[in-house]
Picture 1 (cartoon, rainbow, N blue to C red):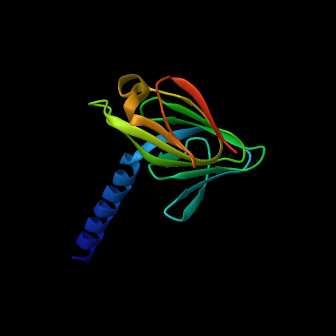
Picture 2 (cartoon, rainbow, N blue to C red):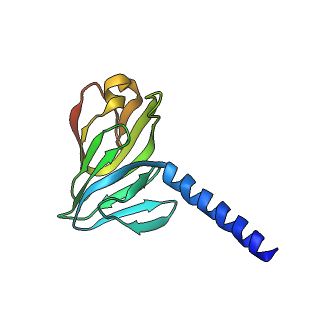
Picture 3 (cartoon, helix red, strand yellow):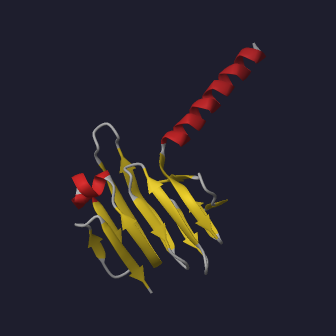
Length: 145
């Protein structure tokens, strides 16, 4: 009986791991210098291949940068001394629907949009402390001092 309960517990745990992986919205493609990832007050190290989640905060130090590729093919390059929040990032590969809302607190980003920017540009936005940038192009830079 205990072995059966233990086995059921492992199956439930495996389901949780699959569920977390399914929520990935992208992956880090490059990391240089000091780059941190924070989600729900939990900090973790950034490394090439790290899966990104919606609502994740990316923080780069001076002389640091990172590049990520999101599920729709969007590439975001994050410059030094930057704080960027992946506020609402989702993409359904079947329907090609979703949203890409980034919150740039400080620093700079370069964005080359993927499917969302091409098919649903109204769903792509960058929020800064002083404005909301609606996207109508496929390659742009946003800087916040």
